Image 1 (cartoon, one colour):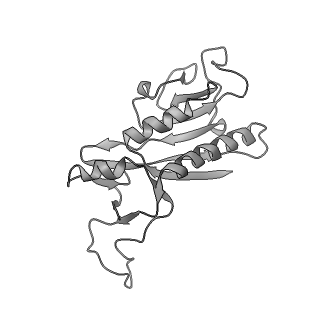
Image 2 (cartoon, one colour):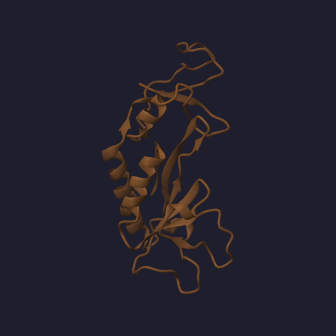
Image 3 (cartoon, one colour):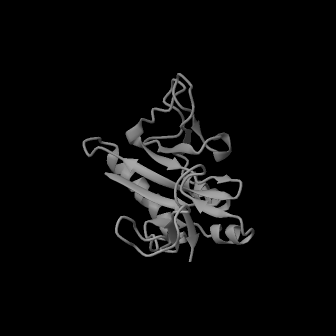
Length: 188
């Protein structure tokens, strides 16, 4: 299974999401930027993760590490969590993603966990309320050699409930795909 759920997640929304993720004692966060030779540590707090990339790992049996200090959490046994970030007046797109091999015996459990987290987000966030645009081009309909700007409402991007109030708090605040490049977006 290969799937990705894209979102704009304010830090208040992230706290709710991570609280839900960690409500299962078998579930841990992994700092993807860790360089520990024993493998990434399994964490029970998002505060210990400095970067924007982390993994969500659920141990099949019980809590703890694999006994040698590492996690035993390979790339196909975890959910990738790319965190939305606030940089100055920008909030960025984030996502959860999965890539499993059907031949892997643990794949079904990881897929169920991913679907459960996706369902949690979709029940609380709104889609088709965000429109991407190229800030370097004028707003105009499609024409030969160029697409419409802005695009239509994006059904594949889910916007957290705290994003709209955050944007309204300062007219300079914006949504961007990445803090240093990419399309901008506004909410309808």
